[in-house]
Image (cartoon, rainbow, N blue to C red; front, side, top):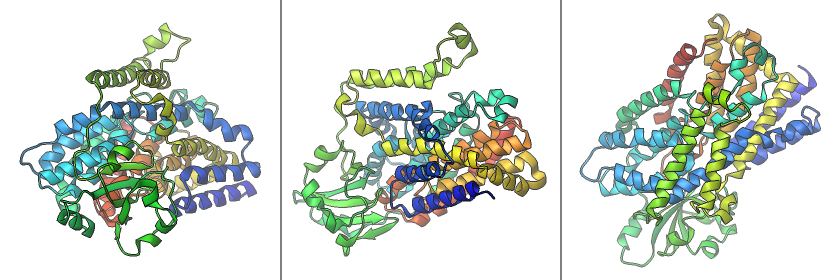
Length: 529
């Protein structure tokens, strides 16, 4: 191994360790590693900043605004309320109505706002119909993940891989298989995404009753029920990445002075903390149970410091005029149809100098939403997850460093040798498993960044079409079912549903296996080696 290979290996090992320890946000961790690679001469300054101008990364930023416009219009909140059965029902019947619809919505909207909107509504509804909400919140998160696998815009991971494909047009593989480097079309992933989603939903319908826990009632809720006549009551909030007290002990962050509420319980990694609460360190995704008055939710419900706010009552639906709901849905439909039609050969031949791709339409839609005040234009920056964007931009640079150093080629050779006589199909399976492990321990975008150069090197060394490997990365990097830390939606529902870490392992691991089997079986049938 050369010095550069060893340096990249150590840098990636440090990155993985830092991400698992969760001492800093993923964006700053990846940016630190990129800076080290630049100092070592593995990356040039131009290669460092290339990801920040990538069309895929900018598309993700604009999709945050589109999702916010849809959210603030109240369209999807009204939809889920009408979808939930109001009479006597069972867990399976309710899930059969909910999960396919949720997967469909998340195929076209960012997963996180879907879960943020639906989670408190579903939890409150479950209590009203006397069903354990714990049977619905993890399936809610998983349904959004499955739906995100079905389209190019379903999750940022797909757009990251799409951007990396377009950035690799100068590679050796691109000269042999130019069709594979035109990027992913809007519904390219649908061929495998829909079968995976169907199998996943069937699994959840069967397994939810047995493998998901019943509600774990806590002391704070019981005390609140005994004192319902008092003006103060309990409110649950999930801490977002912009919460100013992250990684601080509660006693060092005056929560009551900042937000006018008293913290009575902290739920973290399946643990319910009510004693010595002031010495507890606050982390993103923690659920805090607060004692406060009726002014808290109206004041903080649109704040970016909390992901979810709920008080066991119906959160007042956004008071937007109906025309805004229809405009939001119409713009979303225009974006999807426009980007799909724009990929047709006839359109490309008719308008050779234009590029009617997803970026083109999402830019138009986000600007129109701002002008029609579907989201507050003066506050548009607060709706964009900058850490996700920095993570994506740095992911491009890390991928390039793995290529430049030769480390990706070394690992690709190991994977090919591990697959042995199984050939391309075997390497496809090994790449899926490696990518899936990355996403369970790190984040979906970091997993894609590490796996993409491996896919490129594997296809080059085996002289096969790289497209099957690109598709596998998209699916595997999203398949975060066994842990709550790999995907933000899992982190949100963990504390909100008072789940333990083992609940995700027990319920999610079989879904990982099913996703692996379906993907590795179908991908070679749709995309030839």
